[in-house]
Length: 56
Image (cartoon, rainbow, N blue to C red):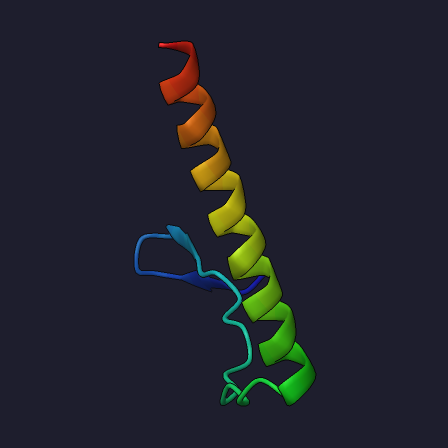
């Protein structure tokens, strides 16, 4: 851990900063996976709403 000592002997502990990097655009395969997951999530939510409406 990187410590610095101030006047009077007090120690300061600074967090280790992560490396900064530029995000990359998703590949075609990742885009398809996101689309499939989105559709499945939509089907799940609509199904839950249908079940909630049916039991009430």
